[in-house]
Structure formats: structure tokens, C-alpha cells
Image (cartoon, rainbow, N blue to C red; front, top):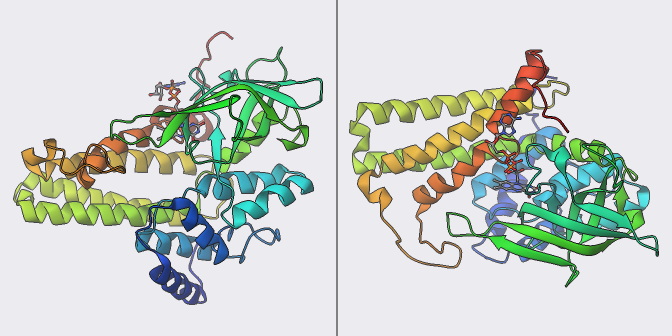
Length: 383
Ligand SMILES: Cc1cc2nc3c(=O)[nH]c(=O)nc-3n(C[C@H](O)[C@H](O)[C@H](O)COP(=O)(O)OP(=O)(O)OC[C@H]3O[C@@H](n4cnc5c(N)ncnc54)[C@H](O)[C@@H]3O)c2cc1C
């Protein structure tokens, strides 16, 4: 399918822009913001005619909403894991009861989710998951093990956990996808991980016999790998174009700083600024070209590889155009920026993660090598 905006999309854009203009504020209460979004019908607009979302938007309208959201300066979403990852997975693999129980609270911004995949010994190699879920005498599961890098676990009400339900199993066999309530004092402990930015966006999560109900296993016991992989397929898509709006804003501020500081007088800096701009244009055309086109095995990996490195280089450039002053801090201390980092410093430090999460650069190159170029599969270690 060729991707193009339809005439009616501009009306939709006007509606989205007007609502955001009237409702975006500086509030730090991200839960309240989720409820505001839900109440106004802006959550779940990509859930199709499922009956569980709010208004049903076309693919181009979803892009328009995401672009306007990024442009408005609205806060980062706390509800995106539930809305963008869990919900499409439940729509594809969940029972009617699971959809009826879990989708409405996501659509109104009441229940927040986190993703319990990675473990200390299972990141890129996710099939190495060791967290166990054993059936207790009352028929429910007891979940034990450790997850790590769990974004938003400190805010979440629920976690979808990839765990081993068959103790004899290895690798991707014998895993299940369980929906686990987070409010289980003594059985679930969330420990924040302090990042080099001074903030804690992700956590270690320890499960010590946490309870999960049998009817909350998605796709059935033992089907966890299939469900988990299907969820990862939802990780990208319309959000790519919106992300580029944010990137363009950041690049604009780096250019402004370069002009102000006089760094634009340096031909090397000028060349790097123009290169960032040109590469961003290429990423946009690539995203438009591949959006809505299923079955392009390499497209998500190429997009991830492009933007991860691009954003890191922007962070480095943001520091370079400030000159030696960029290495000095703190400026001002606050709860959300404990080290008092300014925007350029925060961008520089946080973007180190961009080539890791969502599949590292090395992993993306392996996917492209094997699925697009048809190179021999990489040798696996002995299991
Ligand atoms: C900001 C952030 C948020 C995150 N949020 C979540 C979350 O909410 N939930 C969750 O479950 N996880 C989350 N993660 C974890 C993320 O998915 C993992 O960090 C990622 O999968 C990499 O795994 P790892 O950290 O164990 O590194 P490893 O897999 O140990 O990799 C270490 C290095 O080895 C390289 N490497 C690994 N395997 C190969 C290979 N076969 N060939 C070549 N090189 C290889 C990698 O590219 C990397 O450079 C988050 C991570 C970050 C940074």
C-alpha cells in the first residue's frame, strides 16, 4: 500500500491540535494526564473496530495524532506499554474474558502496565528467561525470579511477565505469558535503578511467589514465546513518525544553540548539522514508504538502526556546539533532574541507551543479515 494522508485527515489534525492546545499543561501528575486522555477518547484509537477502544482512527489519523502529540509538548506517556503493546497482543491472542477485563481500564487511562521480559541473564538472548511460574495446589501460579530494566514498574498496576511454566524446558519452549498484578507486598519488590542522568526510569523487579491467575495466561500455557514475539512486532509503527517530530524539534534547538554560540563558524560543525538534517529527512521518507506495508522483514530493523545511531550523534553534537561549558554542571537541582542537567546534557547521556533497548544495533544487524541478505545463521552457543 502506498502511504498518503487523506483529505479528512486535516480535519482530524485540527481537532487533535485544538484539544491538545486546550489541555496540555505542565502538570507532573502523569496518572491524571492518562485519565484526561482516556476521558477525551484519545487512548486506543488504533484498536480498530474491536469495540474496546475509543474513537476508531485510520492508520493515517493515528500518525496525525502521534505527530500532533509530539508537537504539542505533552508529557511522555505512562500508559503506552498498556495501550501500544499489551492491547494489540490481547486483541490478537487474548480470550474474550481477558479483553473484557483488561482493555477498558487501559482505554480510560486507569490501569498502567510494565513489560517483564529482560532478566540479568536474558536480554538480547530472551530465550534464556529463568523466571519460573509454578502451579500451586489451589491451581493458581506462583511466580519467582528477577526481571531487570523494567521501565515504569514503579508506576505500573500490572506487569506482563514471560516466565517458564515447564521446569524441564529449555530456550523458547515451555514459556508462558502471564498477567501479574503488581500490588503484592512481600511477593513483589520493585527496586529503582539510578541512571547516569540521575533519574530512575527503570527498575529491578523481584518476584517471590507472586500470584497469577490461570485465566490470566495469554495464548495458553506454553505459548509464551509466540505471544511475546508477536508483542515485539507491535513495538514500532506509527510512533516512528511522531518520534521524528520530536527529533526535528531537538535538532532545531541544537542549530539555534550553534548559531548563538558561534559554533556554526566551524565548517566541521556545519557539515555535521546538515548531515543530521539530511539523515532525518531520509528517515522520514523511509518511514512513510514502509508504514502500513506488512511483510517487509528488514524494515523495522533498518529503521531502529538508523534512528538509534542518529539520536546518539545528535546528543554528541548538542554538546559540541556548546563548547567547553557543556561539560559543566549542575545548573539547578530538582526532583525530575537531580543532577541539574540541561537539555543537551540529558540528551547526550540518555541517548546512550538508544542503541540498546528495543533490540541492540548488533542484534538488528544480525536480523538484517539473516532475514534480508539471507546470510547463514549466526552460530549459537551450546545450550
Ligand atoms: C532505556 C531502557 C529501557 C528498557 N525497558 C525495558 C522494559 O521495560 N522491559 C524489559 O523487559 N526490558 C527493558 N529493557 C531491556 C532491553 O530490552 C535490553 O537491555 C536489551 O534487550 C539488551 O539486553 P542486555 O541489556 O541484557 O544486553 P546483552 O544482551 O547482554 O548485550 C550486551 C552487548 O552484547 C551485544 N550482543 C548480544 N548478543 C549478541 C549477538 N548475538 N551478536 C552480537 N552482539 C551481541 C549487544 O548488542 C550488546 O552490545 C530496557 C533497556 C533500556 C536501555
